[in-house]
Image 1 (cartoon, helix red, strand yellow):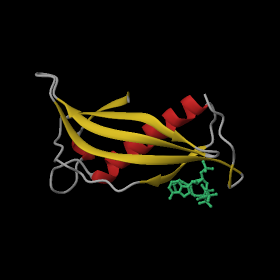
Image 2 (cartoon, helix red, strand yellow):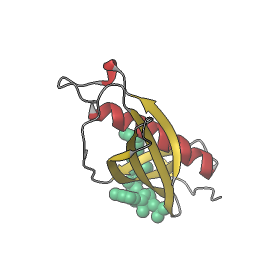
Image 3 (spheres, helix red, strand yellow):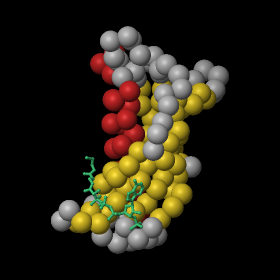
Image 4 (tube, rainbow, N blue to C red):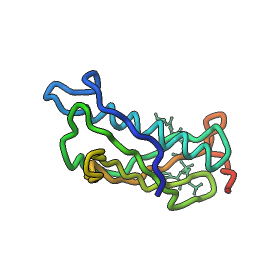
Length: 120
Ligand SMILES: CC(C)(COP(=O)(O)OP(=O)(O)OC[C@H]1O[C@@H](n2cnc3c(N)ncnc32)[C@H](O)[C@@H]1OP(=O)(O)O)[C@@H](O)C(=O)NCCC(=O)NCCS
């Protein structure tokens, strides 16, 4: 599992109840893990195929530091699956609290069709 990105939650990222908007968080995660997939699989054509079920386990407030972590758990012919964990990180006491955990699968797509991935 590797730290891919750290985000600072800003006012503009909040939903109407004052917590981080879940869709915004998913967009950050999708971008970070897709870029990581391209890096380690050494191609530019990885697209998101699936995100397994996930539960937002806690509220995330303005000013929180969020860490997006992922690790490659499976490669197939055209797809790669990553375990993804998002947590808050408290810079004062270094404590970590999990926000969600899921698996994401990316497929190498060229001209709309799955294509063999280049393995590391
Ligand atoms: C990616 C796409 C071309 C794949 O076509 P498909 O017919 O669904 O998938 P296939 O049956 O050909 O399988 C392709 C790979 O995905 C895997 N796969 C298919 N469904 C899956 C699922 N629900 N979960 C995990 N892996 C899955 C298959 O095992 C296969 O992997 P492998 O070659 O490593 O064994 C097609 O689904 C697509 O274009 N999706 C949209 C992708 C996209 O635009 N994403 C951005 C967000 S909209």
